[in-house]
Length: 454
Image (cartoon, rainbow, N blue to C red; front, side, top):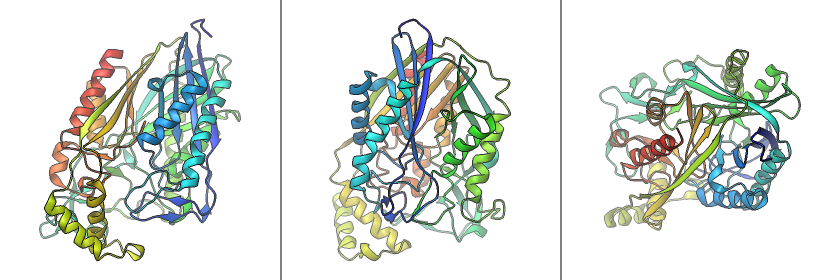
């Protein structure tokens, strides 16, 4: 296929874990006891001339760089697609099997061994489905399902940082203190972006959307679910009246400070399990569907990709911090922990001891793709909406969006001003341990890659 024709193929492979599998995404481990809907690894492969690129979006909470690097190496070995041209990201559903150790949410060894082969299978199947194609980009504004979850509280309310013991200036997710909320502190990114792929025969191949909404989480602990990401995928296929080979994908944007828990208007959404994720996923699909008759197709888009690893300094506890943490840990009962103020102090004391054994730097992957008139960035962490908005305003391309939690996950990467305010996302731990300037350094590197492609 070196004829300068644009080809695209897509596939999905079921990755649903068995009952009993460990689930992370909470402060403690949960175990799968109910499968509400299936999980998938969804792959899109594109080719023009001798350039191939691959996008893979997996229904999972977190995949660390070491895990993703192994997956990408197996894809390269099997397909010849260089790792720099492969994007593997997590949707960030909190109702999936665990392949990463986060807080007391532990790795499931069996699932960790099984998942890489399934991801590879999805790429191989997408490669087999390559056919002459065309692509279109578009975006719409959908602010109604987005709320900054970081709040200024009324005078008198105190939110304590469990690491330092000092008060934070803001509160993340103020459950139980709704009447003391003053205002949320940061903007959200309201853009719902997507690219669509059709065969030259007019048949739908795939649609990959991007929205900066964390996850919905309207299910009981122990549930396996793709959350609103899965609802969207099913609904967009239904609305487009596609064939069985169509692959719908929702990727996660820069949503580290955004969710849809409306503390000031609790009756805004239905409260029964899965009702809110179903409503949101369905609405996003409907709004995209209503634009698809007007999109402009490109039949011979140029493909290119750039990738870089950045070493970022890790902030570690000092000697006095370690002594205090060791005392707290020695008195804690982690098997029966209650996640209250004392429980948080115990959880984060353990984090200090484990963080101390980390290397002094973390490797942060940064990646950027050009597909015709579209530019897609990829960042390996939970970045705030401010980061995504700045990238969109500064990258001079007709269409741009950022896929987060891609090629690994270095945890929360707040802008430096947000770091100073405190809140859950800034509490020092293995999942939030980069120096304050990390966000700016990583964002600037993505800007450099994007400008090279433009």
